[in-house]
Length: 258
Image (cartoon, rainbow, N blue to C red; front, side):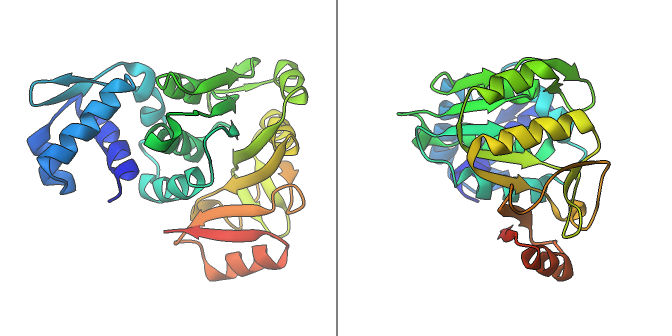
């Protein structure tokens, strides 16, 4: 397990238990005690936890909120996708993140990257849970779009979102979807969320769909866009070969996170 994944896993465990010990983490993740202490110190510097003698306790609900939101879903695949997506971000980038469980995992992966500390990144998001999560990294500039909150997804929607997005540019945007198929492209359950995702993609130099295998071959209510808008798709190894081939034939570049 690499350091970014290990630190994300530590925060996941903290969200579940409220506190952890160095000995517990060494046994669970296999890193040395010295390495584990450095991980905890690094997370404490970002205010993602509070160090104690021999371990750490959860800092606040700011991290717990997105964890609780996604805890019942396939975290393993999402974390693999998140790690692959986060690796595309370079220091100084302006990054767009829509709401959703996979993009929340991307936010956690970005927060765990030490190499983004010097120059930082700017994150533009319409998801209040993601904004709260990344606000714990003071070297990150976090821009929240404004708008009306959607209680199901924690996403802000409406004309205020559109006004802000229309006036900015993004280096890369990661968009979560409810369905992705060769015939229907990217789709979501809500037309207002689809409109925000579409505009965020249009404002980005690179727009990337992040979708686990369960979303492939499915179509939801509202159309977002096709391969012309989202040239790259990141999914997990559970994606059926037939769906990957169909998406490739439709013009998408399908990348499989491992």
